[in-house]
Length: 55
Image (spheres, rainbow, N blue to C red):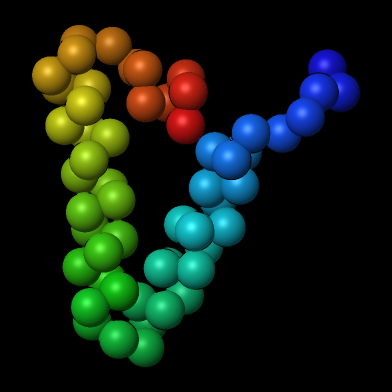
């Protein structure tokens, strides 16, 4: 599978960034909390792992 990477293949960089910045500023820690709850809410509403499978 050597295809062109999609934009969501690089979302781990965003996660790493707000994780590190959350150590220095509480606002980034709140952003991390939202980034945790959004996939959880999608899983509860849709009833599947659509967020994990795509993003």
